Image (cartoon, rainbow, N blue to C red; front, side, top):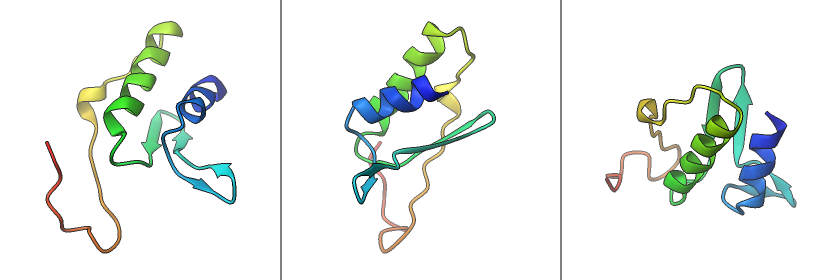
Length: 77
């Protein structure tokens, strides 16, 4: 999974806090991505990783969740 995290970090998408990358959390078979505007690009990186390493990845099962002031705002399609 380090390769996936490295690819997401290199994409420059995701969150950074004090210079550290926090664009995703990978736990067993779940991937949590942090970056609403670049979500499609980050999913594509995960899909490409799955192809390269023969891992099953279903990007059609993703779910969006907002936290904070805009939690109830309409998301773009």
